[in-house]
Image 1 (tube, helix red, strand yellow):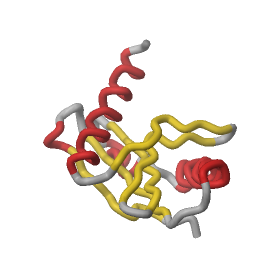
Image 2 (cartoon, helix red, strand yellow):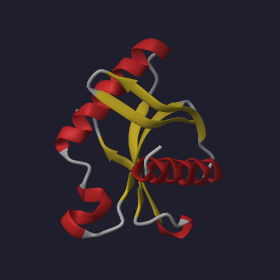
Image 3 (cartoon, rainbow, N blue to C red):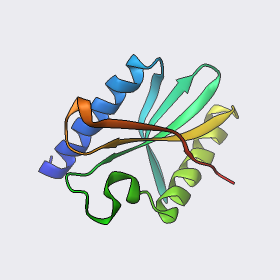
Length: 117
């Protein structure tokens, strides 16, 4: 595993732990289809939550939030549609967990960060 992959895995684990403390249940990690990937798929009550985890060590170019471009959003939506086709339609939303470094105190959770519309 490269250093970048290790940092990404650590960021996803921090996000998983944080979301679990907030009451979400992580039901799948790193769901991939051709053209898209979802870092975490969670359950929040009866809703499915598709979570993008972004780690940025620098604030250049908008930091972690700025890196979730419309192109990235389209890839997440594509993967989410595939997930829902396989597992059944449910109410859903797209959240983002932003980390400016691998510190559990630097987590920012954006609920309903964007929509599929």
